[in-house]
Image (tube, rainbow, N blue to C red; front, side, top):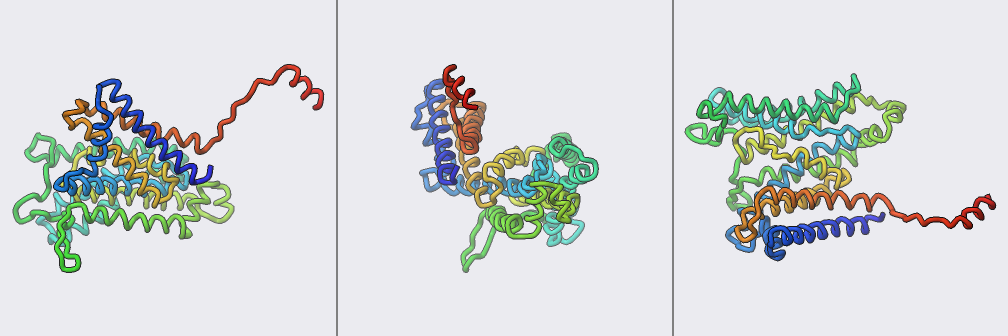
Length: 374
């Protein structure tokens, strides 16, 4: 199907899914369909100017985090290495950054802590990604199961250190790191910027900027570099790649170092950029959602911006439904609606990939005539 018709199919699937959710909500709860639509839009774009910044910028930040993880898994996917471990690799980055904040503050000069966090988070994510790559390259293990299981190990490691560093002890909650005293905001991303003589204060600006820069870098890496060409060759056929002199094992390891490193950088963005703490829920399931975003965008980094925006916009709208007293909906119902919307979006890909033709029953006389001619 031509790209224009494919785009219409996808837009149509989104519209139909929202209409279906509105109809379902009206049938089950008696919700006014107009209130439903308005609530979804206002979750990210409120009509009250005083609320706009408080919702728009967090929406962009959620988009940046999902986009970063989508970019992270894409090089591996292009090589047909199914990295389902972005969640664990992100938690590894969060834990490494949090450890630097927790253990290095007061030990080394404050100005060195943030660089140490950046290096530690990237290395931790890369390590969590390269372990499955080594086993895949040398022992032929299943990378899907391996990376998936690594998520649980990362989550349990995070839970262990949350108990170890709990404040107060026994609470299981680390709390905000470097929140007060002489070490206040040490290891945090800066939030005040001087731009053309004007002072701008924004908690999300650095994270959004990092995601924007990484879109450009990953695009050129995959489509304009030798490494990107090698990825595509390995993804098409490992035998062909070996025939061309490409070291498949090294490509596998190198790509997963990049993929895990980007996930670790995303963990740094979560810990040093906004949350300033560590816990097992920081990734928020974005590592799994990123798989769908990358696939929907056909591994194109610029299309991932649109796919990420779509998912974040609908997800925030679905979650905001439960806070609207007029709709009388709970969070579970909003999760159901989000699942329905994603089902429509994914399902429309079948009609884009395949043409449906209906077979007609051949009359016995016509069948005999065909056989006689044969």
